Length: 255
Image (cartoon, rainbow, N blue to C red; front, side, top):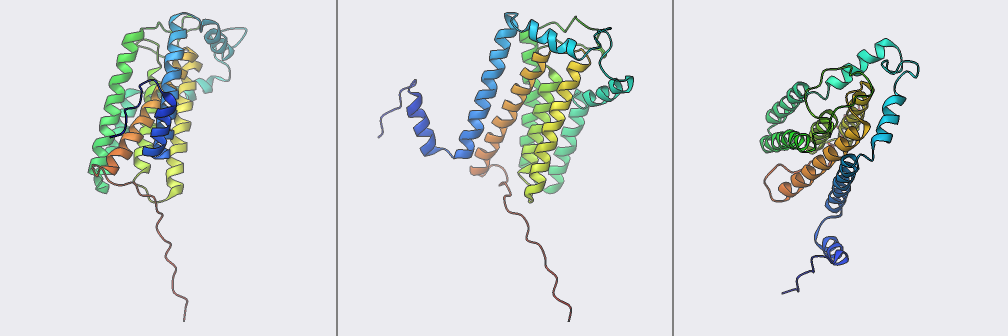
């Protein structure tokens, strides 16, 4: 029986992981760990008040210098950003999650559907707990362009959009046959997450560090559930990921 690895021997754990865990899984866990570390590093700075200068500078940089109550750009831009920010609201995210769950059900991927619902519901719960735990006040430098009801840190829109869109993209991409569709899903989810987060700062309802921390926590959550999906797949619990594209059908030459 091999000797146990000392708990603090990082090098030994890396060697063990390289020998016993797939490289892709190690990469996912490593990136997720880096995202989690980033979240708590930002949270620590926020709680100590060290980010106020950075937050204030970026928030005011998106405002008219002559009148900080007015965001930069034409009036219609505020409406556009309100539309984008709505894509990260609880109602929209719930509808999208249910729509994707229904799609997986109709495809026959029932276990993947349950995995999606567990990941998203857990993400909603985690976001609420973090907001209650940190209880950071909303920005007071500029007027809010939207009504807010909860604490500021982390940004619920940024975190939940990352959780929902990235998790759905990853888990739905698993059961798609074409690589181009997988790439499209992941790229679209990433762009949506970024746009929604930026809109929250532009509208004055979040500090920039709220959004950055939300992105980090949401990305970590999506990566961890991607890893869980891979493990459940190897265990035969959920459907296998489809990695081969369908062969093109070539018609027979005309006689």
